[in-house]
Length: 342
Image (cartoon, rainbow, N blue to C red; front, top):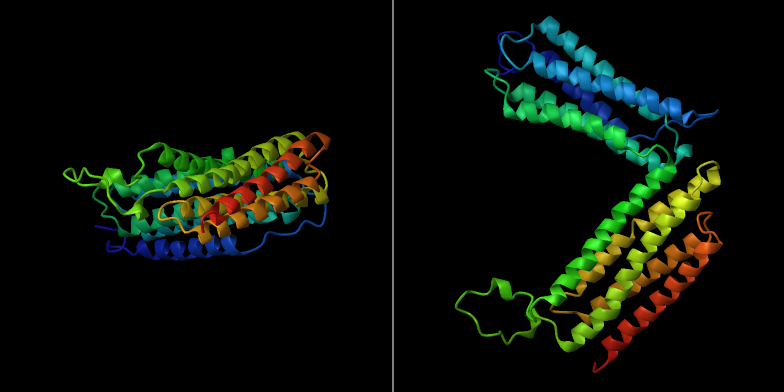
């Protein structure tokens, strides 16, 4: 038996609840938060938000328990459960809307994404309850309930201000760039033919098709491209240290500068990935040169924004200038190697 085909009409309030939560989720995902006309107390916001998240977690648990074993709740009890959980969901979304963009776009995005994850979790739980047999607590229902708990628990790890939110963005970028660099290094350190591990056991002779492995020229070109990728990683690491040391959230100008840094650095990992992918055989030199030029131009732009940011003090200027030169040097070397013998 499922909630949908039970003797009563308990599925009606559940279906109405599902529709309502989906609407709330879509509004949170797409709608801007409120602008604060007066002073905004970030500490009070977090206290209220955490209370709202805790309430959603508790209500989701009650709902799951109510449908974990027979008998089913009556339609009246189902309506009360649905009203209670919808009230907690609406409270959570309302508190999220309190957070103005003036507290930082990076912070607001991360709080919004976490809020949407909770609403997604509750949506999935209601869908599972509507579709699952009621003979026992299904694994799917247990998993969905755990998903709501996990999404709610994530709020404890959220950055508490825009500086911390920008550091989260930078940390994520560093991880992706580091992975791309390591993958290329590993491929280069392996056999001459990077596809040798997929040869048939009886096909031991090296293949004549050089489209499947790097030539000497390819490897020369890869060197300065690796240099650009490493400059990207160094830029992100140094910027992280600068934001930790000098990042300020006490003025609207400084908040906006931190958001600008977060937005521009989000473009670095896709640029590194594009360059890394173009290095694999068969190497298209024009594609490599295009991707190297794009990444170099992006890094120059990032360094210029860092240079004009409050996060860049006198002690940061040295590495900004060094990396600026390193970008030019590696791009020129890559172009020179590509043009050789062509």
